[in-house]
Length: 248
Ligand code: MG
Ligand code: MG
Image (cartoon, rainbow, N blue to C red; front, top):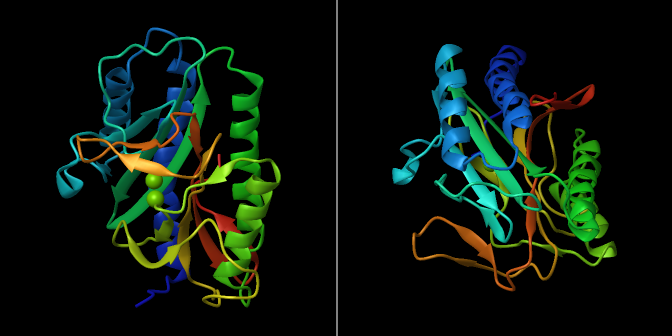
């Protein structure tokens, strides 16, 4: 069942997402060589607590941290650890917050210092693909329009779309219907309606889209060990067009 949100509920979701935005803005100033993802996790936890929210991922199906931090070939769901980040790394940071009964969910990939040009391109293309998908989130369009726009932008560059993990509806639960694939056929799939709130989150690999799960049962990595990027926004479909609740 897809749960449509009222304008008041969308405003609550914006507030939850804006706590995540504040986390990302702070982390952006702290992601430098030598910092560990555990350090970042602590910073995120403190900001969320100060704002009266709760980390959405901590304890979710037993996940042990506030952030998912996925370095280089790690795609999503990496667990913060003590490995210092070094120049040339990329780190995908995904953060969820519960505030006043509603969830916010937003992710970005950060570069640590200078990174290879192809990886720089990977980050830009993933962000652009997300923007192209979001632009089509208007009432009457279909989910396939969104997925196809993302897929085309990524594949035109020779990068691989991850198909094993997808975006999702979001609201009073972190994961609601529908699933939001980052691939698809234009003109097909669910018709979008005002009041839908969807977390759109392309995971894009520098090589193929194939992934595997590590033995910690959380960390997803690329099958070919090449880098992967992840950008996510929580977006409300409204009569006035897409409303990015996690806008900076
Ligand atoms: Mg997320
Ligand atoms: Mg999500």
